[in-house]
Image 1: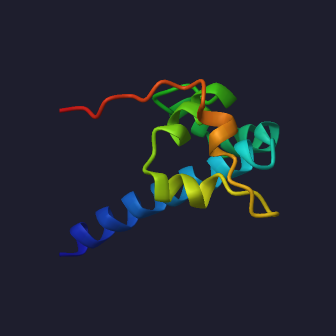
Image 2: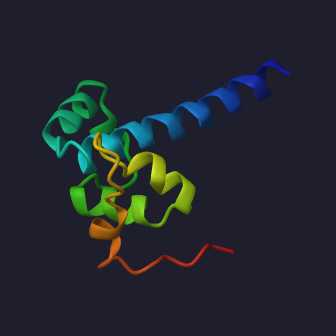
Length: 95
């Protein structure tokens, strides 16, 4: 039971981290800070995929609309997904 709880907590934590990283990069345009923190905790060495602004845009734009609304709304309440996602082709769900 403890293993299941720890596993669920880790998955939830990863999702939370990705949302914060996406928001810092896309709304606040602060990829340098995110990369410094990732390097500090060695995420740059252990990550399975590259972390660039383009990869963050592609990931964020392929999220559910309600998730995009949370991540891609700036402080003035403007939804930035229309601007960022118009050039990104949707990725079909894996089977």
